[in-house]
Image (cartoon, rainbow, N blue to C red):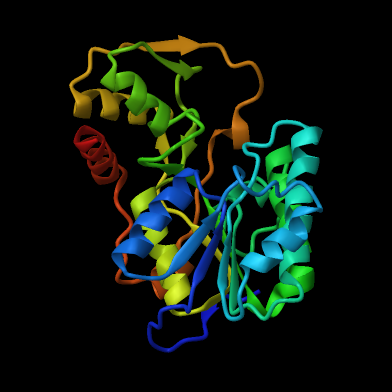
Length: 295
């Protein structure tokens, strides 16, 4: 699926329906859509049990002709077979509710976890061969959506995301910022030597907004193109927050994820989103910390 824009110029979608209302991507996307005066609704688990087939008819009534759909809803990160199956049920409900509707576009928020581990930089053409339940779930849902909505489908595969609105407190900048602001000890695995790519959520939602405005189709990785060790990120956050937190090394319980190195080639992103400058990690972390102070 080659990535491309169908609209030569930016054009606001008639309406956006966000499936998934509370996560870091959804909350920040809602903020930017409001700012752009783009009409949208969000569908959350409090009113719609997407794991239930009974929800298909209920959700179908919410969807209107020419809606642009953003599918984010998931039980994540997926850690076992039960969570995997629940996420497949969610996708079945979404497919069932959309297949008889004349929607304008479907954007699926996937994950870089679908890719195999390789020695070089990962691109959109890298083999999808996940080694985790989480990656397998996203790859399976991608295949389900391609089977029914290929001509309308845009698949976005973000790397690790940091910024306001995180609900998982995952290992990395989001957890480190929370600990640093409370002057609590900061635990890092091994020597914190694992190097990963991280993208600032403010940049990510700008990309999604443009994908809506220019009606993007195809597959795109949402990455910064840079890798940093977790030790570097922890020290950076301690310095930026002027925290008294201390780094504490703990033994890993399993092998280092992705062999400790996960770089990406971002040429495709650069080519189509020249006006959106992906924040260097130092700038993104600074903006993140400043935004927390405002709350």
